[in-house]
Image (cartoon, rainbow, N blue to C red; front, side):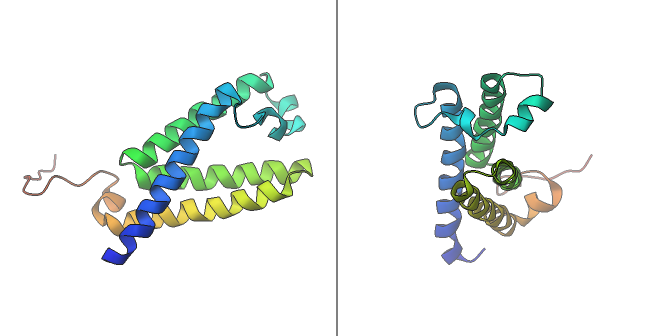
Length: 143
């Protein structure tokens, strides 16, 4: 990857990774916002869980995605974040409310997709094999 792309890569990786992680944690404390208001009431008729329980499950996924992005599974985590954020935007649009947040989440989804693509360019071996590359000088063997 061109050296001038390192800055954007790290900005996206830290920004999206920390945002997912912190938003996921907040699903348990509601310090930032009451997340339940963003859950489509139709979803509650389809799932056999309370809004609090469902949002805590969402929080676990978001924390996991944030950790993945920050800990070296950047490509996979960023693709999951991109799809996840787009799904959140669809949820909000189908509610007929919070269009401003839906637009923001589409933009974040595009940013997460861009991060995933940058991760592929940065580490093409891992992108093609689905694994992290060996350390420099390590001997590679195939089973």
